[in-house]
Length: 426
Ligand SMILES: Cc1ncc(COP(=O)(O)O)c(C=O)c1O
Image 1 (spheres, rainbow, N blue to C red):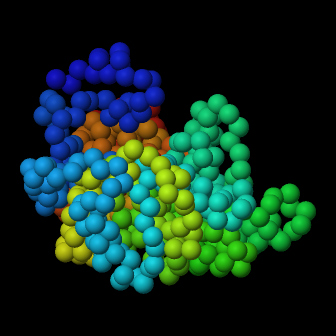
Image 2: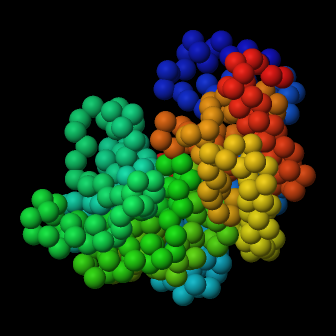
Image 3: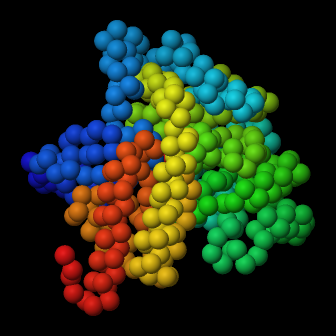
């Protein structure tokens, strides 16, 4: 039942997660996944952030089943549909209006990368400038435009052509903390001999998720927004991974009190792992001509239905408070259990995204493998994959969160012992 031969024989070498978790998955409910052979796994990966409400959340699933049963439109290009109308209304009611945000919503191809493409295109069109500033460690997708704003050399290497038009600025992390990155960007912009032209936009993540869970603090985010405003540069917040309630508020930049010109959402915006991407545009930037950023799969109708149900769920179940409560639990676990294992381990995070940085303290691959062996699905991220990333569903039951943390703590402890003594410990 867990035979993986056909995948290895027929599926492209490009496959990745399945190499880390080499079993055949079959069923899933909430934060539990089951392999075809019945093995149970706790899910701390949550579809890389696409499953903020877990697998097959019953209230959302009910809406989908009813929708399918009613023979409503499933594929609708960008036609006006009831499903889309409901989703626009729910976004307005639960996300935009409560924050006094005024944005137009663009539905593009359903991936984060496509939404980033749209954001970069409209920023260039609106300003007439071509350059973009992105940040070292940033991850924005794999299509050529979004890849050009992604820092990782391994991924960039796959492009086959030079990736142009983006200058990378230091994110406040590591050695880059020793100087002021905002002052540096300011200097680049002001110095007529800096060699870098004023960009159309800056694209940033409030927490670099794939980059290794690196959290920008509120002051830095506010200064970045102020800098953009002063220099008449558009600010794009890529909230693909840490938006949709992951850090507490629905949009991750709410904590800093800023209003980016453009916001990019995907992954959990459909609430069910269905494909959907949305670009939020300040109305003045909605300069698209009809069909100028086209696509057959814009606004998947099932994703609209699930997305509406997910927004209602988020509000009804007060997921924000739940994220804060569980975030405190994880932080305590990291402070008390993980940091005790080795003082060189660094931990970072917020809400329900946390990173355990093993750069000076262990082998993340061994930790991830040990976790999987013990029934926990968790991945590593960051430079050279040195950071174990906790990304559970926001509605994970406390018992499963605790059980997963115990497995993780034991895996870190055991792989340390293994590293130190050279003997496998079971
Ligand atoms: C911040 C961010 N932006 C963009 C993307 C790309 O999204 P997709 O994989 O759906 O193209 C990701 C994916 O992990 C992401 O984390």
